[in-house]
Length: 234
Image (cartoon, rainbow, N blue to C red; front, side, top):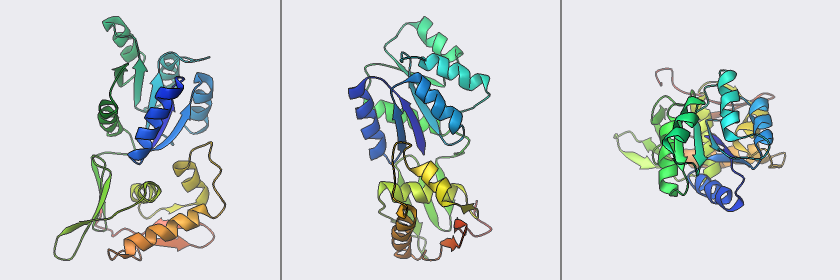
């Protein structure tokens, strides 16, 4: 899941980004409302959730939310603010925010609210994805594989491997190009090496092969990669 974090308090933004990355989210963090809008305008469907501070330079989180709703963008939005009056909460929700978190807050609460919000995302319709005896659980960021006896075994993946498999499982039987994978799984500020996608695919295939899924991800030469899901999978 890719998250847009817009927070101009450096220490708080860094702490949130660190916590989100530990939970296997891809995080684009910006400190300026105008820059955030450029991100949203350039990639309107790439994000699963936006975390917006209310008070931002140039363009407030509230105004960002209003612009999203004016454009009929359903992106789930969590507003962060020190404003704790009922009137302020009403104003934020009326602007189109899905949730409202008052500073200071605990990271566990932020993560719980984020999990609730991401279930409203058009990309996610439940707490799990299940394909080809693999189960991805959004509540605890785990991947398990079911063997022939019906037993489930945990597959230990790095954050990037988890994100990559999640992306494939969200788009079964579809060809995903290198550029699509880069745009979804690497932060905008990042400058990945030219072979980074191929390298990550090799590592993920190796992990999956240990659990009998060595042929799950196919290279479609000249086009990209595809997760070949059984027709009966949902």
